[in-house]
Amino acid sequence: MASAPDYDVIIVGGGPVGLLLGNMLGRKGLRTLLIEKTATPPEESMAIGITPPSLEIFQTLGLDENFVKQGVRVELAKVHEGRKLAGELSFCSLDNPYPFILAIPQATTIEVLEDRLRQEDLVALCRETSLLKIEQTGQQVTVTVRRGDAAESEQVTASFLVGCDGHRSSVRELIGIELCEEKTYPAHFLMADFADDTDLGEEAHLFFSCHGSVESFPLPQGRRRWILQTDRLISPPDIDLLIKSLLRQTGYNLEGSIRYSESVFSVRRFVCQRYYRNRVVLCGDAAHVMSPIGGQGMNTGFADAEFLADALARHFSNGEDFQALLAEYDYFRRAAFDVAATRAERGMWLGTRRGWLASALRFLLFKSLLSAPCNKSLPAYFAMLTIPYRSLKAINSGQH
Image (tube, rainbow, N blue to C red; front, side, top):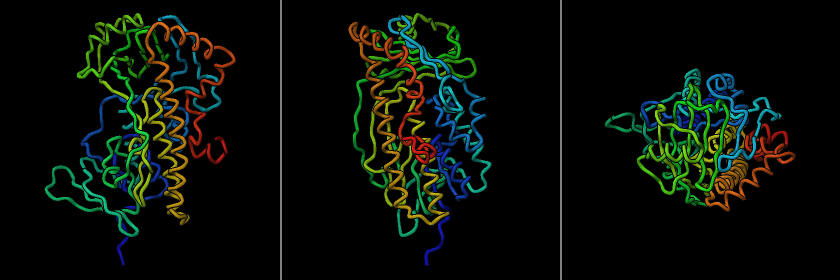
């Protein structure tokens, strides 16, 4: 008779989604091991937007107030075309306990989630631990890992393994799940966080023009993020180009402002052919990637984690068939991804059209959409409150 596995669940990947899943599994009484290959958490801000549905998930862990306290409540977004104000989008009217988008660096999100994870007696976090091999046999998954610079690897067992290890997922590669609907876009961006010496306050500002797009978001500690559309991927980042382009397209001069970080990125989209294979499950960016424009990717991953934690808990506590539960996870979360990714793609396409004609038509469209009565439905749209199956609460209440 085979011995009982070491853990109920092993999570690979200690980013925001993996940490949230670990917290939720520990809260539900599941013995969980979370392995992360890096030695320390990141310091970069990276993803910064947390939507109301995600804050509702954090509330179940008692973390919502902590997040709100450390972030910036973005209650108003202003949309410009060629330096002319096309309209405003206010989140204050949302029928939700969190009528705003929370701007908070991903590094802070990880810090908050990791601090809480350490309070879970049933969850162990092991950094500097690399995944080498996965074997599924009978009622368990056996993983081979190497800790730090140890000469020897070791094996750990669990009833389930979850890959939360990002778009280059080792878990996905090791179990041979293929990508589908994969596409890359001719859209490239240069991003940097600066000390905020502007008069923009806690508002988000979207600047569109014949030259391309600029997005600007407030951050805690008196900082502001700027994202510039570029003709090509510019690596290493050309900060002089960024500053000159921002002055031309927005009128704001960042010359002399303190810069905290910079990066470049291009855009792609994919979803896996399936989100699980037997007892190994993919979650967050390991399962799907969408355009980061609009900030929906990380929040979609948070909703994945909520659904998956509930499914696994139902298996362990009620004895429900895990294959049926994971099939539901695959169906509902794939449907939610498809809507979110299509919205992100649509928004990116609209915002990145260049030329005088595109700019003129876009201005007229924004003026129409951001005026009554159209503007009444847009805040919920951009706050991800109209994504189907956005959360367990929405599914259980029939809010599809």
